[in-house]
Image 1 (tube, rainbow, N blue to C red):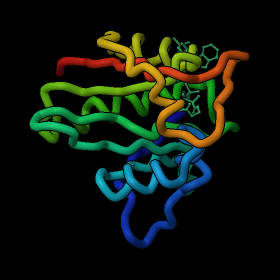
Image 2 (image 1 turned 180 degrees about the horizontal axis):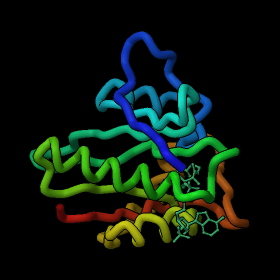
Image 3 (image 1 turned 135 degrees about the vertical axis):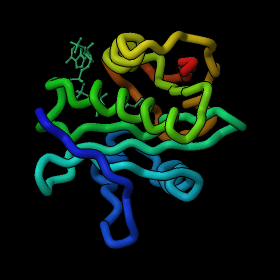
Image 4 (image 1 turned 180 degrees about the vertical axis):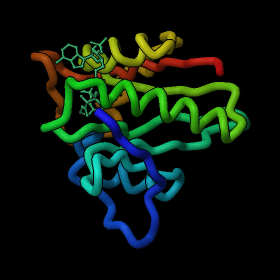
Length: 152
Ligand code: COA
């Protein structure tokens, strides 16, 4: 499927429906949006995906809030978005790209490793500390954040 990716500009409404698929906390999403740049994936004029790039340290960019609209998932668009985010991070002179996901996010862990990311650590109890509600996915409680990294 052919997608185009463009930076979110002030004329476009923030696609919270997509951003909240990746993170249930609007407060955390807004924090990422203030600190980073959002990129929108479109098919023709329809926004079907999103990711946010955050400069976390010198030469280090983190991909946060990556999501594909439910109707378009499982067709390779998520992979295209991760690869596009890596390309953008390189253009922004990053040497390291990072991404984090829940201990329960089995498909996401597969996707990120297929795109070259390696697991570097575990932020234990991240989701307990930072979210009011308990999060369950794949029948497992999401407690820990798996941290992954790619040298580019
Ligand atoms: N079953 C098994 N593996 C799956 C899967 C499924 N239903 N869906 C995706 N995957 C894995 C596969 O490993 C696949 O690799 P392959 O192409 O070699 O088969 C890989 O993911 C890429 O799949 P793709 O079709 O590109 O993913 P997608 O378009 O569905 O996007 C997400 C992936 C995670 C962005 C999307 O599912 C999503 O928006 N989820 C909700 C938000 C979210 O969880 N964001 C990430 C927060 S860390």
